[in-house]
Image (cartoon, rainbow, N blue to C red; front, side, top):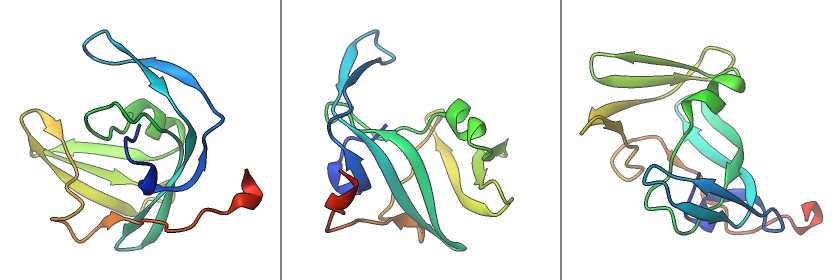
Amino acid sequence: MCNDAGMFKTLDESYKSRVKVGNEEFLEVKGKGSVNVQTSSGIKIIPDVLFIPEISQNLLSVGQMMEKNYSLQFKDHKCTIFDPSGEQVFCINMKNRSFVVDWDKVSNHAYMSATQDVSNL
């Protein structure tokens, strides 16, 4: 789930739904698309990301990452994410029992697209 439309490489804003978040509140989904993440081994695509402007922070679902053949290793207060080919995507330190990626403070960062390919809409 992502709250920033600028993070999406592709975004289908006709996709609508609702999701229930941790405080039992339902939030409106205003689209679905893919987000590209720059890693040390190249750009990795995270597909089927929900666009939810009202969510307070961007979230990755461990279960959905595993369904897409990513693997996650939790060890030494870190979460390391590997793509389906076994290459490390990134490693995140635990903070307050959460794993938050600060794209400005790590060498890996989200790829921001300035244009949208309207042929896909």
